[in-house]
Length: 245
View 1: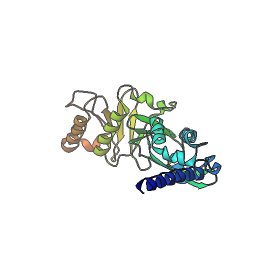
View 2: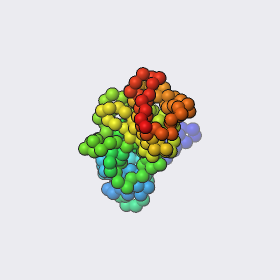
View 3: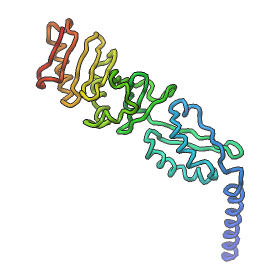
């Protein structure tokens, strides 16, 4: 009886697998020919190269195979687009799948005149007009002489994107409510227009916490602080600053 039941179970499993394959892998309607992308994903970030890359992995593939391979597809996409945190795929109708893409928030948003760029760890990317990724982040501005840049990778030849991001976190915290914060490529200086309209220069290649400490000491103990218009914190020795009225 045990042998008979074993044979029955094996045949049932084989029949079930054949039935499942016929209803899934071998059904033409499940071959993905069209992809509907989530509107929220597109509003966040609609880089066409990203969605073309997803298309290459999914279009022409069986829905169940694509869904089963989601982890592999995600890891492959993240190699070129590290800001993708996850994605999901659902079958919606004949030959059509619905894809939702999730993103991490950039660490830094840089504005070069009318063009926005994002920085995530050491990965830099263009933020297209209308995209909301990075909304609410402090904005780092570039000067007019950098307006011809089509990429910001060149900003990081003396320091990494991650190092600049960490520096900006210190600067934003030390100068809350600033009117703007600008980075000067080539000079490796950051210019802050404070809330009380003083222009402060920080040297990004020297000790930033020490420069911030010097600013706090100047603000607290220098009697003529209110009349200052410019403060250079990083051009002299670590305990000296240059001021201008």
